[in-house]
Length: 294
Image 1 (cartoon, rainbow, N blue to C red):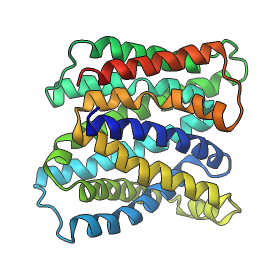
Image 2 (image 1 turned 90 degrees about the vertical axis):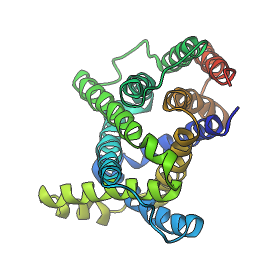
Image 3 (image 1 turned 180 degrees about the horizontal axis):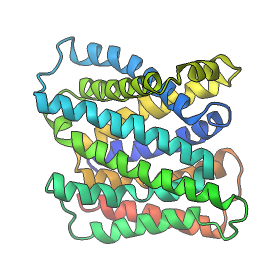
Image 4 (image 1 turned 180 degrees about the vertical axis):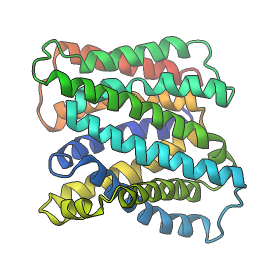
């Protein structure tokens, strides 16, 4: 297993924990406010990290690279994460996880057109195993537990969020390879934070945002979710894309849903059914097939 594959898998594990915390946080804090909080916190932590690890000198980005960085942050963080959290609130973690399986196809398609990447050999069936396993893990026979209108809205937000995530990361793939890692991550977060703040002011929604933050909130859970979901996961996620191809990193990221099921069984004592076990086995088998190519 290469360095990029290891980072991509670690990102999937960390995000599995983060999704549980974000779902809990979303019960009291609206999606926009939750995303704004985690993006700003991530930026505040990433700035000193970049300065300490890579020095105070800002990388020599070209004008085109600056535009791509800021735009990637706005699309892939401000827009995508807000829509993802909205989908999470509307239809729950499992169904949102199913829409997340579109990340790999979206990244692969965009990488072919924008980066000239392609899969080869056993990586195609490996991707199929991962996607089949994730769908099997999250499949629900009984669908009456959620309102049909909420399901439709959640699916729309979820699919759009995944496409925006894919576009945002493919846009900065080559910049990550050419420039300092933490500074690149920091400026991408800055683009996301600036976009969200500008949106709040232009829509004159700042008073409602402040009101949400002034109410009693489970701040320990919210801060933990933001720290894990933005700062730690962002570092691992982007590192995976820096050190391996975008297609491979996205496929390994798909294992998040399977890890959520595994952690629920280990730590929350939720039942591990035969269907879930089979889905987990398929996902792990797909990961092995993908990694075995290296």
